[in-house]
Length: 117
Image (cartoon, rainbow, N blue to C red; front, side, top):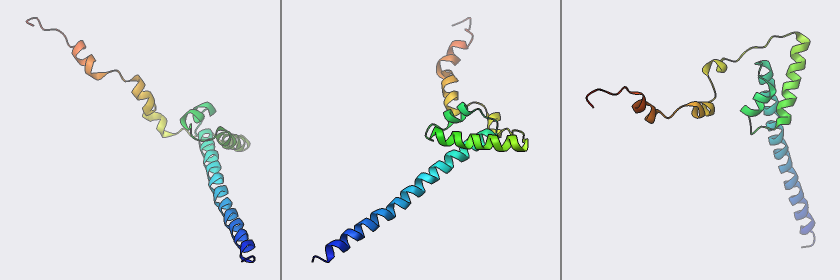
């Protein structure tokens, strides 16, 4: 029995440490995604603040790191901004909801009154 306890403890420690690799992989993937988003924002000519507001769930430090790397890369190679095609589609869906008037009340109110009614 006394020999099994150290082995069980060692097994527990090895199992717990193998989980750390999975956690680190997940964190590195999130950081890489944030850097990619920041780089794409810079390449498309978006301001850093716009990039932050469009991606609220991504860490701002990761977005900034990617934006900064792409900025340095573009300046060193004298690259031009490549505007994204999504800017031609209009405002964000959230902005459309805010800006859209209530369609039910405006149609009845804007209709001209008839003389016989």
